[in-house]
Amino acid sequence: MESEQSLSPGGERGIVLQDEEVKKEGDEEPTAGTEEEDEDALPHSEILDIFEEGLARLVQDPLLCDLPIQVTLEEVNSQIALEYGQAMTVKVLKADGEIMPIVVVQNATVLDLKKAICRFMELKQQREGGVKHVSWRYVWRTYHLVFQGEKLEDDTMRLKDYGIRNRDEVTFMKRLRKK
Image 1: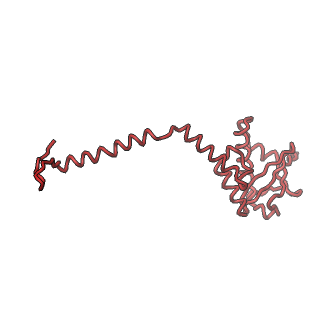
Image 2: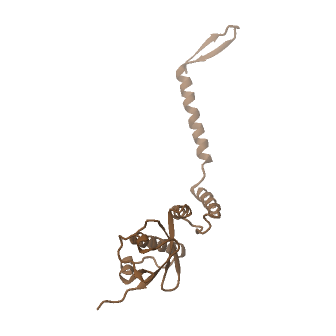
Image 3: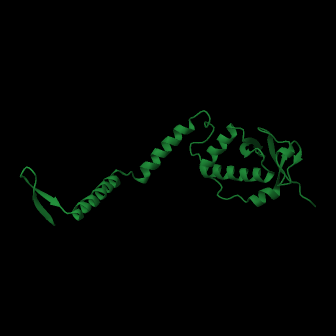
């Protein structure tokens, strides 16, 4: 350690440190602060718990109260788009009488509706358990989507062109076998 003794104007002795040593001491302070920050960091499980509590409070908002507790960002964005009129809800009636509320954008096509149905069912199965895999190729070969007696056969056609609006009901209808 290099230091020099000097006399101050009052005749007192003091120690003058070289610039290098001052820099080294300055370098040590951030590492000590970093160690303290690491000690203050929360474990992943606690952060996850805090996030889930915040999400549960968020879902209690009147705008988002229809969403499940284990909500995804996609569902939150869909609900917000629905509130701003950028999306619509299409009620899809299954053969067993269950109604699935499917949210799609205003200018959605039949294919967009089919993809949204697939995503809705995936999330439902994850939350409730049950069947792990659904063959959607089989489903779309076996069933039609029908709105007011008209089959939604053209995947590229917009729902508006079929006359489907917000809160309209579309039905899963079993296809008749061709002989």
